[in-house]
Amino acid sequence: MKTCPYCASPVEREKNHYYCEFCCLNITPNQVQEDGNRSIISFSDESSESALNKTTPELMTLETIELLHLLRIARKERKSAYTQLTKIDRTEDNKSAVEHTHQDYQYFSKKTYVLENLLRQRFGYIPEKLDDQFFNEFHKMIANKKNTAKMRVYSD
Image (cartoon, rainbow, N blue to C red; front, side, top):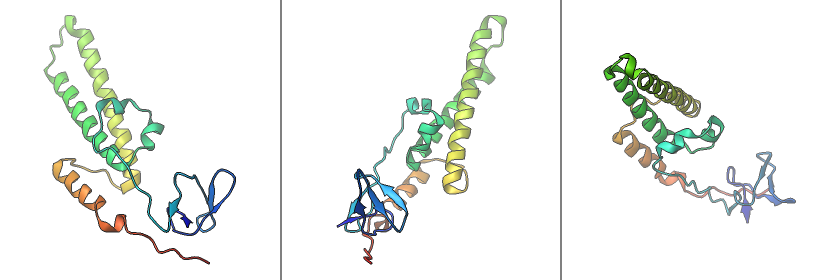
């Protein structure tokens, strides 16, 4: 039986989607589940620096774990640019290097703010320290059996 991935209610097929009366939600065929199964969440456990170039609307579509990894990268790059700014020779000959490093610092600062605010909307707070221990605990929460346990199907 086809069920809603959010509430496990039986869903009815309409033209090119399913509809859940309880959730008042159109569900695409690739989202619909069988017999109360929960949606399988797929995500990348690592993110590359190139993903930082995504626009804010694109970042909003990423899974939380991916945003956390990107925030870790953005903070590292921002710190690196700041360190370079403090050490760079500020002579007239290096004016373009100083300007380039300052632009990098501003870019990574803004990306850090975007990522922090997206995570703040999801968590209610901004994660302070994103170290290996944080990610190990996060993975334990994701692996919790309750996250994959079937939901009970209540048919009317």
